[in-house]
Length: 130
Image (cartoon, rainbow, N blue to C red):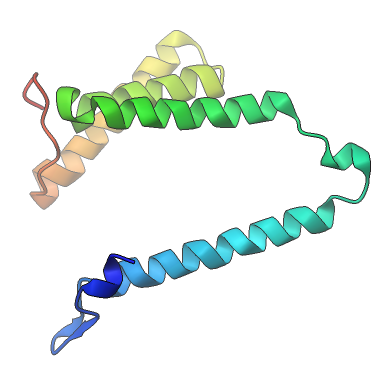
């Protein structure tokens, strides 16, 4: 909805609203495809039962993302993303503590290397300065 207010095409090519508009349309269409395919696969009462273990894991991932976003302004992108990655790897994928920490640090360092260092894009900075 917001992208419709931005310029769709400019004399130089696609405007600021081009990608978000088509990305939103694609997300809605693909979500509808997933819903329809899930409904078609549910053939018996056993298939329609909710797998609460998987649902808890999905809601846990969502909760971790919410916490990451909430901590973003205070801790900055790099640290909050590292914490999110650590939680997902440790809790969702049940990897050892050391592996989860290594993956979190490497992913956060990769984001820092690519965006602020190579591309010059500023990421939200927290109280620790990065």
